[in-house]
Length: 393
Ligand code: TRP
Image (tube, rainbow, N blue to C red):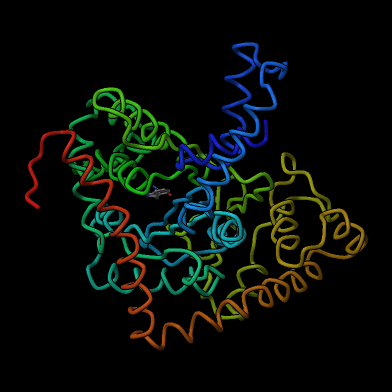
């Protein structure tokens, strides 16, 4: 059975052994073959030798194929603590086990008409912050979205597979256009996001809950294209981290900490100087009451600060409650400030070093774009071929 599973994995080439196992088990239990007796030992030996033969003739790359992860952030504002805790920190871990592609989605940022010089600067800031947080350009692909023109190319094709209704029902689109008049880029934003993901045949996409609806569109588009033409895209799954601590605003702890909050005191930016961090935490709103206990519903403010503390030092909430029993909010906030400053210190050191050496940073991003483009090109060639968009060799 093992050998056969392996053979299936090898044959398909496009899936992990684990996935192959899953699929085989499903298939065999459907047809009642699981009893096993049907496989005579001769067949087993045959399968094993085929497997060994296929395995030894496979390229190294095929043998080590790991599930593909794609994720990205907009360089609209400076990245903040919630981005680190909710995304970057998890990405760093995922590099160990996955083939990771991390993008700075500057084309998405254009939908809110940023100041050009700021968009340019923040794109590099974000890249430096990815790396400073522990994303390793030797192991993962890091690049700027616009450096791979296939993102725009695939978006156009996918636009022609998307209905008006699918875009206009998007919660984020409705929210963003409630007060301001919308540009068409905002409307088709989720299609560009689908293109990002599908170009790389991503298996998994780490996203926050607010992006699940967009991911659903990416899945639908992949299936629609595959059905209308032939299998072309991997249908991606959302990847929601198991222990995702949610970091809330320091000023309104019932809403998420946001990099675009108008009140700068509500957000700890990853490049905030130590004194700024200390001050923001000192001025963070607190609930009525004085004891330092976690209760997200009744006391969202102190619960948020406990979460931030716990993430910064690795202590559990319970340990912190015990440590601060009988102490004042002021004591707690002073120590919290130091904990967060210490958490950010190594990240900021690496960040400033990278930011001061722009040539090196740009060279890393150029290499990333080259690697990404090779992969994106392959998908785009298939898409053009299948849709009848003529390309000359
Ligand atoms: N829309 C995402 C956000 O605002 C950013 C994004 C763009 C993204 N393309 C993506 C995230 C592809 C994951 C995968 O958070």
